[in-house]
Image (cartoon, rainbow, N blue to C red; front, top):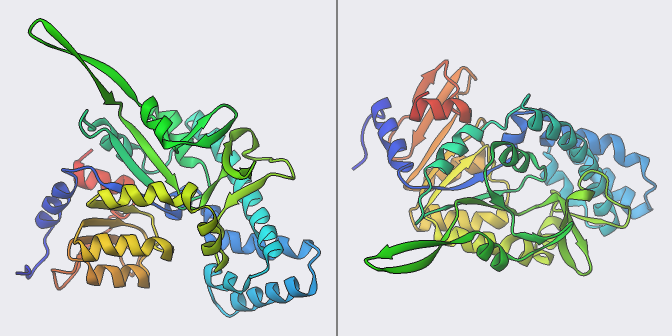
Length: 364
């Protein structure tokens, strides 16, 4: 039976219960925008509108691009406006502009994170979960559609072991089987006068970058990772970035094995999901999210600044999903679960900010 009034005591109790087990974590553009709004869609839209006219387009490309511009001028978001792009060469131009723009920002923040003058907003929260991992449950699964490397720089700076499944030298290839073996080490235990060797998996993070990354490229008929090409790749290097628009689903199918397959498998095994700064814009993931949260009644928690129609629809259907977002007047936080008729309002507190969320739930 639904409770009639949602109280702060209930919220803290439910959130503590949620984190008694390790969640599968999704994080989106909101986590990069918390450092710099230029990582967001509005800045990318402005960059494309500014830079694309500098390219020589044929008649069909020009027609498609003008359709995009018209949609943007009419108030459509970039994701929907780019649905007009069906021409492959025009898509390559859009991908080039996008990757060059994000790469400049990425380079700027790589130094700042390394020097300690900037921190990824969720690092202390992530370390809290990482440090509580046990030998029997030693892996955190994290998925992001972000292209940038802010998360990777953060893990390196904080000393957190992570892998994106690539293995090798300068030019790496994806092989989760090798990674699995590399992350295990022998542990000797004694039973009376006898000894037994058991291989235990060391604690680490598995990162799934399902829309590609600045350091992912297509080379020798396969997806590789080359960190040396991160900011200034050679002209013949084809970046693997899945940009907004209808063609992204075609691209995702081309690279499904490399980008999605391992994430799909990991999601299926989990029953607890945390979404941080994640806008639920990816319909190819929607099937998995809905099956887990709605069909299987898995536990979920959304911590995000902005509410949208997709989140509203999801929270209305999912039995065990909580929402933390800003108030309509932007002066506080609202917390909601469909089993309570009204949301709980926290005036003057930005609990939707993951740093403040951590303090609110776990203390200083």
